[in-house]
Length: 501
Ligand SMILES: Nc1ncnc2c1ncn2[C@@H]1O[C@H](COP(=O)(O)OP(=O)(O)O)[C@@H](O)[C@H]1O
Ligand SMILES: [Mg+2]
Picture 1 (cartoon, rainbow, N blue to C red):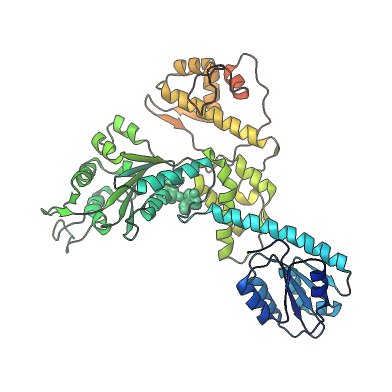
Picture 2: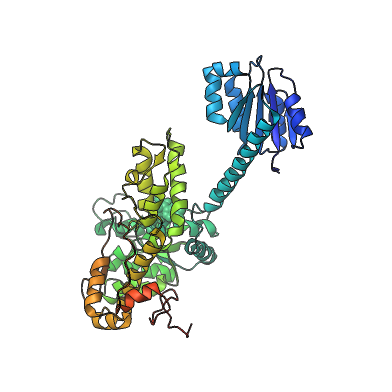
């Protein structure tokens, strides 16, 4: 266990042990080592919050060895105490600048050293907190996030992983559906088997049947030998059918048979082959809607939809944006030699103001690009391809307000069957106001049956406007400012009529 203020004091170059003794005399918890080997042995047994390197004039220990010792000390902060001549050496200067929190030149006053050690302790505590938060952020499934949405997703994954039923994962592109599917497989008793991912939208309709179900020799021109399909290849494991909405309707029938009977027959074959595979499917389009317009078999939909999971779009879990950005940043810098240290405050503000239409994938791409493109130590909004946010202080509320407004309108339109008159009445605004708001949010009624929300990606982030003052006589605006005003919607529990909550 690391104790606050615990110090590993390494004295090199035959300097007297007086520094260590004086610190012990003042009550510091300190262990002494006279060379790096002894320091290594001490570090193997316990960890220290601080390292103190005392270098005498006669020290001949190479800097690389000192650096290795510091590297082995994990999150400790190091302070150097040295003779002024030691700094004549470029290698030693480089070591001090790169690996030490601070340094003191001899002779020094003990109070001065204690002050530096105190500051270094604060910094070590901060670093530990930061590292711990980062460790908790990424779980064994490679999923980053701490907000309620991702916590709930993890719980759902654990629950469905314990069963054998098909799972249908919904969510926008780039939100993490495939990651969730992999997580389900990893958590299930099938984890030792294979996980086979198939993008139904990416395989040509003429090939997909033999890809999925395999074919017998001579089944069609060019089928010179028999071939197992992807479903068979996933035997004992999980098959992930991504973009299942793109599966041609005749293959939907085959898939339904497989789900019901656990058998497949290859193209050109007569045998029924038993296959033990769990099916996880995903779609970014609303399958219930595809059923309604006759593009997806209703029976297959119900068969797949036994267990369903929705991965929230990133804009609904903005609390995870900084932690995801940091995670992707660490992954990018680990692979490249770069001086970039992290994100500027403006970059974080710009990320929090962005609507992320491309979801987590977009965030990853932007961070990757920024690490490559930036010339500075801290990534700025422009490096991310985002607009700077002017009103940083007011940002949180305004972004939330805009998103909430858009949500309420979409939900209401969906509930009332896209009827503008009914939606306007429910929202308590005039039809004109509703049209204006729909235009503002890029919401269009493409046809009778489809609600279309215009994608913003890859256009730049929406600029944060100063909070508009509520207009008198505009109940929707008023509702946004005072959630208890009379609005009847099941949206996140807000807007319940006062007195009925
Ligand atoms: N919670 C998360 N933590 C870490 N990486 C994530 C998370 N969600 C998504 N990603 C990453 O974002 C990218 C897009 O995710 P993916 O699962 O392919 O999305 P989808 O299948 O919904 O299009 C992948 O690189 C994935 O690893
Ligand atoms: Mg995908």
